[in-house]
Image (cartoon, rainbow, N blue to C red; front, side, top):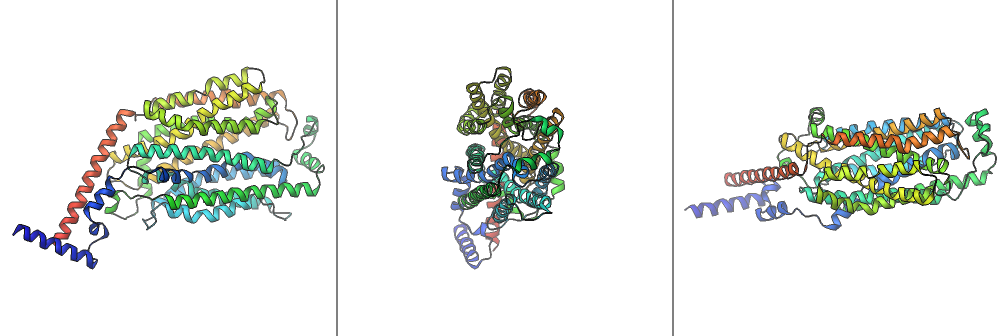
Amino acid sequence: MARGGGAERGRAAAAAAAAGLLPPACRQPRRRRRRQETRAKLSVCSKLCYAVGGAPYQTTGCALGFFLQIYLLDVAQLDPFHASIILFVGRAWDAITDPMVGFFISKTSWTRFGRLMPWIIFSTPFAVISYFLIWFVPDISRGQVLWYLIFYCVFQTLVTCFHVPYSALTMFISREQSERDSATAYRMTVEVLGTVLGTAIQGQIVGKVDTPCIQSPVFLGETNSSVAMEEVNMTHDTGSLTDTRNAYMIAAGVIGGLYILCAVILSVGVREEREASELQTDEPVSFFQGLKLVMNHGAYIKLIAGFLFTSLAFMLLEGNFALFCTYTLGFRNEFQNILLAIMLSATLTIPLWQWFLTRFGKKTAVYVGISSAIPFLIMVVVMDSNLIVTYIVAVAAGISVAAAFLLPWSMLPDVIDDFKLQHPDSRGHEAIFFSFYVFFTKFTSGVSLGISTLSLDFAGYQTRGCSQPSKVNFTLKMLVSAVPVGLILLGLLLFKLYPIDEEKRRKNKKALQDLREESNSSSESDNTELASIV
């Protein structure tokens, strides 16, 4: 009788499934569901497709970071004061948009494409258009400042709509920590390669036209920078300026095409997985309640504090190294190759750091990787100007840059797992974690830009000069050596407070697996009971 009753319930459930009375999760065969739930390994193809999605943000960011200021001054011929307004307001708006986008993502319901992927897909074409218009010189006598300010801010908003959900996607490509760490290593390798591409594409295309420097610093000291730029521009004919503008637009078109290609590969090759616990509800989470929980999570705050100072150190180095090579070391024609050596070194050593953190732990990798730059940063300013030594320092700095790229994104998922264990009933806050980390990173970028500009201005920096006063050279030494070393040491001290070591990671991993198994078991029991009732 029992067997007959079970068969009858099975036939009833099958009939109900065929009639569409059961939800899709209940109609799915249990054996198939178990196979999907236990499928933890990500293929190399999936990791590569996920990693390619990190290239657009780094490529466009690198091109803007290295060339936008020169473009506004020398090509668009804006007043330096107006150019500074565009750069500062754009950076500030860029930082503000990250929490805003994180808020809207947290309110987004799940769709057939996922919750994060639609943001990536629909923001891409508009981001490419606005990026191209940044590098276009409008034929208007007034309103150029407003033109560049609007499209710079619009692009920063749209690229944030791409990058924040892409960063949060780390938590939805796999449930296994080891697989997420491996995918993050792939991503960091491609992102560093993206910085190489951004520098190479923009530099090689635009570098065809050389703008001569001003021989006499006294000339700049006796006249304002606008007059100086006007005099320099008089040495160039209209055709030369037109060629330069066309070169910038060609570079923007190539990078824009690369942006679209990477977005297509990401959307086609990566599947956004949904947590079993999230299947129980489609209600959007409360952003402000989630924000309060996130910002009160001690491990997150300590991780952010540590990387805040180390990121500021490397951004100061990145923003001033070209000026340091050009004026302090005297390698005016070599700085692009030196920057390329840094990026290539970082790209090649990311797999090394992935192996190192797997073998020795993430906290150990932080101490060894980031601190390895300190002796070389000291060496480059203490020793006399030497091209070979500079290249050695560049390669060593690239090794440390690789660690600085990889480790934050590898450690953030551990913090989110720890948060889930402490707040098992609070779901959907991944975008908040990632958006505020990106916010703090961009905040440090703005701070580094402000510190560099003000320091060089106070030291008497001569715009477009062939050489700089001794005070400027001393300031550049401080910005690429003493200040970054101090910030790195402070950041490493703060990492001593970070509570998640390898032992706690293993415990959290086991606890999360037990929690998921319990959730899956409960879901299957509910489905069986519903089938029996039907």
